[in-house]
Image (cartoon, rainbow, N blue to C red; front, side, top):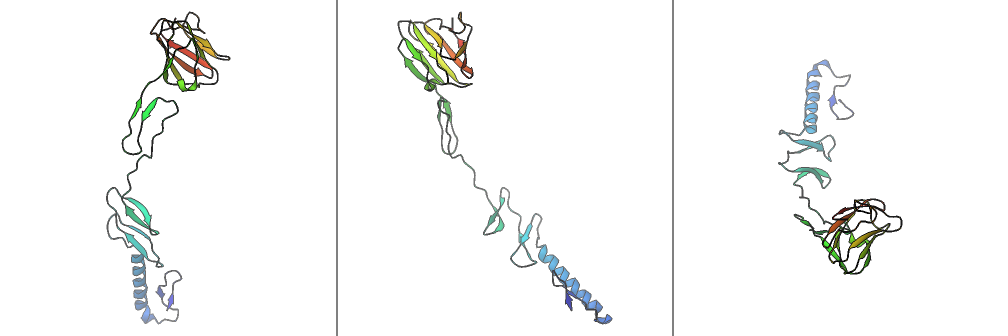
Length: 213
């Protein structure tokens, strides 16, 4: 008998006698049935089938368990329980004021205020003062300069007058200070223990809010 090109099913030859027709049909039907089963090996609801190394034969992959994921092992599909993900580490931004962290499990971060105690009559803010409380303590008047090109929008620096010397803010070259102080561009801390925040609102532009005069 002749065979089909793809699956090799037996089919009657043109010269087969009519009396052999039924047998030929049964043979062909049996071949179709076997091939169909080989291509559809699933037996249970949720089963999957994948191509095996044997031509025209698929392999059954039984349904996995709840929580499993489909993966590949040794070059064939398989079910596996996924490894629970975990953080590798937490890095806080420079001068963010955040402390704490972990490399696994629950991470706890704390915002702890740092201090910079200045005792001179002049001081110019530096990048390290970001998110700090700069305390200014002197018996004489103090000039606090806000410099250019150090801070960016969103940065905040806190200041407090600890001594009797009154603190006056000064604009560095190219810097603009805005406030409700008597002199908007050069506000003063109102009295001893007064405090204020210097907020960078744009490049070299600052808003001073707090107990100012």
